Length: 375
Picture 1: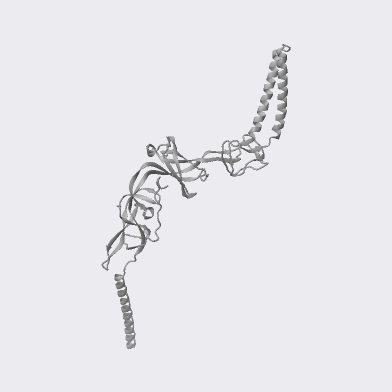
Picture 2: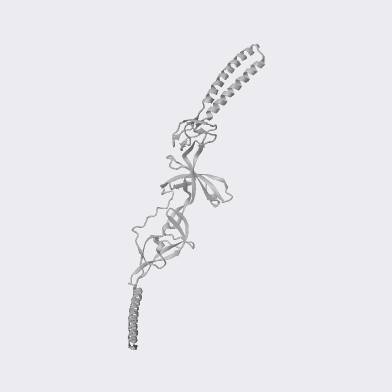
């Protein structure tokens, strides 16, 4: 009995020893592999930090507004009898657009015109008789008063009929009509929008600190998401006479030519105002900038000795100060120098000391920074 227990215990010990030995060999192999392993290299695109000349400009956002614009309506109520325009049509000042039913007014006008003719005949006859002293002066005064009364009634009826005819107050482009034939219109009901689109205004705001640098006649450039490949040129035409007491911003207005009607009132626009002169700046693509709550940074590409005696490239995170942006670029005021190489794509996966491979074959090309000469 004791011999069986001894043999069982010995077998268990031998099996445990074999397992421990196998695990020890596996751990030793893993440690050795870890010592000999190399960190994977990240593939990035790079760009050189370059010096460039940027014209002095100020950027803002604004909204487009028609040179003249109005929601047209009639002054008097009535039923729509004629619609004389097409949606979106170009019209000239004075064109008849809509006419309300005027049958009752026309009948009353004909009656009033007949009374006016009679009153005019009576007045002329009375005037002749008075010239011969055949009748007293009071009869002539009464005839003249009656003539003025019925003449005024005729003019009033004609004015009422005219108010039921909607005409274009200025030349421009119509919108989509809001009425139909036979519809009853009340005073002030909108019929159609009329906008004069050439030229067109852009309204925008700037901080009060920039008032001294603004003057009518300065060149402005307008960009809008509706036409991402177009730049519209205009000039600053008006500066508001007061500063907003709450925001301390001042309102400005620019004017642009819009012969093709591409720009429409209400569009959002990015505005750039050129102030003349140029500044020399260090610029990098916006894609190279890594923004974080604790500051802006870039990854600078450096070289260090490799294990095989050659050199390898690695990155170092460097905090910088930035200036204004222009196009796809941003100016760097501190932290970099001309000729530095920075990661322009793939920075999100980097860390200080990470080895990198450079592949610029698929790197996107940033658009050139805008200026009066290249727009």
